[in-house]
Image 1 (cartoon, rainbow, N blue to C red):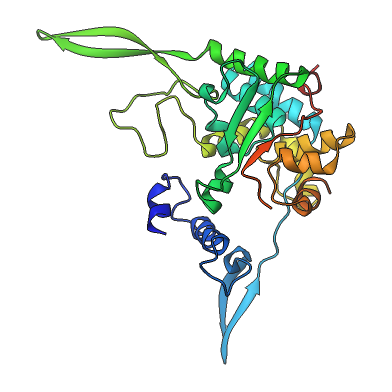
Image 2 (image 1 turned 30 degrees about the horizontal axis):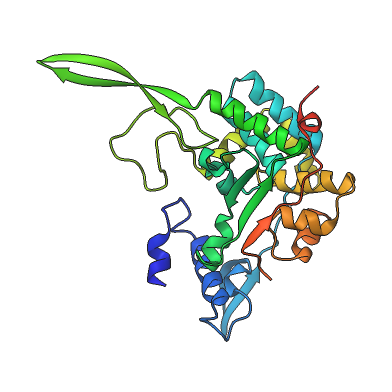
Length: 303
């Protein structure tokens, strides 16, 4: 347990209930709490109300999040393109093509691509956090067909901005001398930072790395440029879609194009088909070869 906690990198939710939920999930997964079959903290409970004779638990009505439509996705993508946010455009495209969670998107490295460019590997962070390094799921994307051409095209675009210029100021004999230094980002989704700090935050491996929270906030910024998206969700009593809804949208497009439910479930790295059907389409495997998606760049690009 101590080893697992020590291995965790800092993130903004470490002091939140979600960190405790993940911790209990891990204990249940490794059978350290045999008396529990489900995580009691995943049940959403509102504030406690003290009444005579005891404490009454009031269950909170969970508000559903609206699905992202393809038209809404294209609106957001077009806004990012017009603003010149190339890194975010690449994140939106890879989010649909790979169907990865946001943390796995920002953790993708150029080194995850095989030397011959035929396979892209990605660790499923959620699986590794719950099941440990020995049993965590690794996705393997086959890039040998037209689907691979689309993925490699996005990675190639990201590679063009990989070398980021940084200006260092040094003092030589009392004179401040500035020199240009290029930093090669190891991450496919990367961005030049506004400022460089001497000490990196624990959540980053280098200055060009982005966090999952920053990805979500950027998505929210471009989504809210189109008030009709939020308004439509509110009319149906729902919350507006987030970056995570790209996974559901990609799954629905695959379904419309005739892909099998099992293939879609595998490509989402779900633990079972019931999760895919209940949340994304309204035996753990240590290494997964991802079923090819039916979504193409042609489907995603705004006209």
